[in-house]
Image 1 (tube, helix red, strand yellow):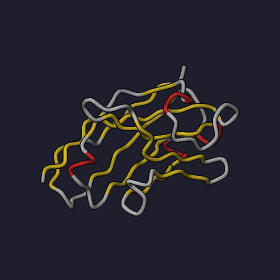
Image 2 (tube, rainbow, N blue to C red; image 1 turned 90 degrees about the horizontal axis):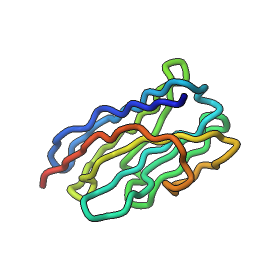
Image 3 (cartoon, rainbow, N blue to C red; image 1 turned 60 degrees about the horizontal axis):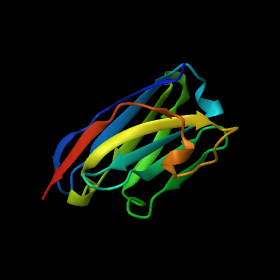
Image 4 (cartoon, rainbow, N blue to C red; image 1 turned 30 degrees about the horizontal axis):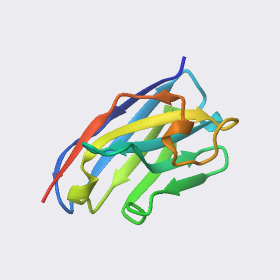
Length: 126
């Protein structure tokens, strides 16, 4: 049974940084694609960044490229999202999601992922 635990959210001023963590169990990381998604009030869930440890590929949304960095520690079954130069528009609930590399490539489409963790809230004040 795949389980994901997201953490690390909080309140930060614009220009600040946060690091989100997604700890997983019930699967082997290199066999899975792990992604971060976010949903702001009144908006659809959108892909932020995805990593495939099996081949090192990654995806970043245009809105976060150059500011966010995704990484994985397979020994800890944990994926991190380092968020720098945060902007008020980054405010959202952030979710991590996972699916097998057999089912999904490094995709930013939320509908392609079967397993989801609970969200962690990020608030960026101006």
